[in-house]
Amino acid sequence: MRSMAPALFPIFRSPAQAEILAALLLHPAEERTVTDLSRQLDMPQATVSDEVARLVDAELLTARKVGRSNLLRPNTANKLLTPLSEIVLATMGPHLAVADAFATVADIDRVLIYGSWAARYKGQPGPPPNDLDILIVGTPERTAVYAAADAVERVTGLPVHPVIASPQRWHDETDALIADIKANPVVDIELAA
Image (cartoon, rainbow, N blue to C red; front, side, top):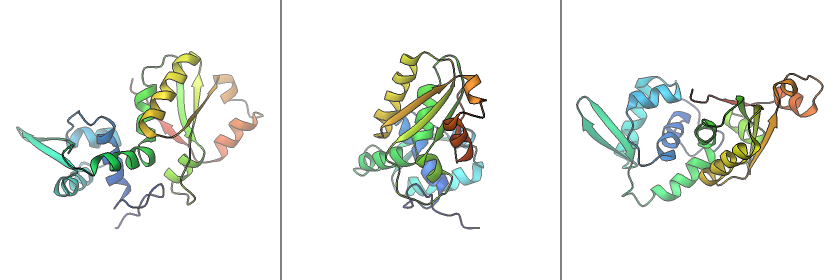
């Protein structure tokens, strides 16, 4: 079955291809294996392997053989990598950048991306998102949240608007913002333990 191009930026062959690129471009100096990517992105290993082969053939990635594994990283010698990185990280990378930046912020129960970026990521058509709306459920320090939001903004190039909601507010059915967030598409961010 043929997969549809991602609604966020439909130039990619598939959402899987764009997600793989985003995961690798987020930390371009790190080498990753197909197994690592498959686990992180919750994709079948065969899908990741096929998409990686296409990206290596296109010289967007390099593969270095170590034992039975290929260590993958972005091909920094490719002149198109810098503009491609900006596009990929702004369109398909925000959820990965949010997970990365908020992983070390204490006292967070849940992180959600909502608004236009979440709607496009979930496949709803519309104009490209101009910003990133993030809901942080918990009792984190504001300075830590804003520092993490700034880190996401530097990576994606998108203005980031974090909102902190206590667990009580998250469960308050009369809160207009929370009700709106729950009624529309969200991307639930899995933070590393």
